Length: 431
Image: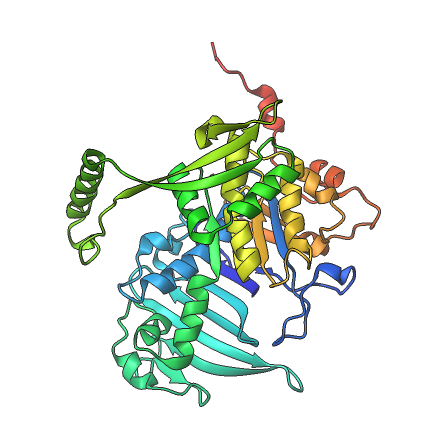
């Protein structure tokens, strides 16, 4: 369960920005989580609003970059392309970028983060917090290359071959990842949590092959079919099929993959790639007026139905297993009411019994009038005069509880909307 995340000198974020997933107050707390390991209540959802280009996507991408860096660093150095610096001033390119997060794992509150300057990890840390009497912090490890004599500090509570592992940790690698690869007991478990409990969708994800594979892997045919029936998109049921490729097609696909891998040179993955023998597709079943079953392909469906099916695969997985689902533009190709229904799944203890969380960006203002959304669950992004992103929660504003949040947002009371008055003088074709 994620409690907080932050970043600095990352994409459009210059100065440090953080987002809290702990509740500001306990009012209207039916949807809130009460996990062991922390006194505060935790939010099931966070929604980001803001003008195009204000940095909403970059903020949530910071989570993905942290997760990817941890996973990548177990086998190779961190790639600067994964953590690009702020580009709108000259100094930032040479300064470290920082990514960090707080989370609950195994009923313990942890804080993990690192700084990376494009060449070396300049700092890395992992702390735990206890709330037995009052909040106290324990340093598990702290890495700081500015201390030339002793760049690693290990707390007494971190048992294991810490010094040995630090000596084999490369300057562009994360100690946490190397420790996991070295089978460090605690850090291996934290590494696996970070790597496996976060899923992302940063595009529409409508490739039928990928969607069908996920449905078969996760086994949600029945649940998706039932949801589609209940929201009345005309689908009776769907099936994800796996069929063997024709030999000529399979040979052509595998030859193309081999050529692609060979072109990567030293960047190519080690070992031989598994042969691709099967392809996957989705069959959509509808009923005609006579009650007869009529078969449609995935591509026969509207973009909205395709987008909903693709989204539901990941939504149902995280609701079943717990974890965090991060989505860019959740309303993409979806009707407003369908976006709302997806959000409601995370706000109900019936459909979300395992503490799953949804973090998303959106332009769908109707969600602001949804009674189930709290003001501390809405965050607003704006671009400063220097082009950098700033973020703040709606709960920072003094708003009457009876106010229409949607109208207030569209009227610009909270900022985070595009400034369009200059377009009044726009002419498409200048003489």
